[in-house]
Every structure is written in structure tokens, then in C-alpha cells.
Length: 135
Image (cartoon, rainbow, N blue to C red; front, top):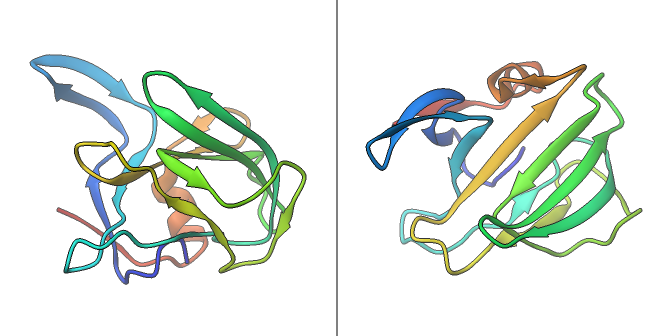
């Protein structure tokens, strides 16, 4: 589970895309984080995690770095999120990480996954049996 929304709705995939009339590389996936009434939904730990960092980027907002404890991924990065966790905190699957960060034109969660290097998060979703669909 990542968001209490089954299937998880992916609004922008991993890889090259056109944004603002320019080609760019999108290093993660963007997931819908609102219900059918456009109310923000909490972002949940998809497995046991240790929060290894909470950062802020002036252009992209807050992000949380976490190390999974059940898979061989080295790091997950959750972007555009108002944290409800602290650095060093251990989380169990389904525990709230945070809420979508307000102020974004389109509320979404940007998820990046790393093994030895950046990897398409779709592989992570498949390994965790998280149902998803693209729109």
C-alpha cells in the first residue's frame, strides 16, 4: 500500500516526457493522491521503512528519504509531501508518512526508487503487489 487508493493511479510515468514544450527525463512516477471528491489522501509506508532523511528543495518542496527493510532497494524517495515522520523513525507497512504538500498545481506524489542506481518505480510496485493503472 502506498496510498489508500486501489488501484494506484499513475498520472506521469518514469522516463522521457514533454513538459512545458521541452523534453525532460522524469526520474520517478507521479501518483494521484486525492479521492474522487479531490480530498487529499495520506501517503503510507509501502513496507517496513527507516526514515533516513527529510529534505526541502525550493523548487520541488519537501521530500522524504527512506530505506526499505523488506526488499533489496537501497532507497525510496517521496516528493511533494508534508512529513508526519522524523528522521530515524522506523515505520511499519501502512503507517502514515505524510500528506500531499499543499501549494502544488496538481496534488501528486512523486516516487523514486533506487537499487544500485535509479530504477523505474513500476518494478517496485510489481514486487510489492501494489495494483496500479496509468491515465
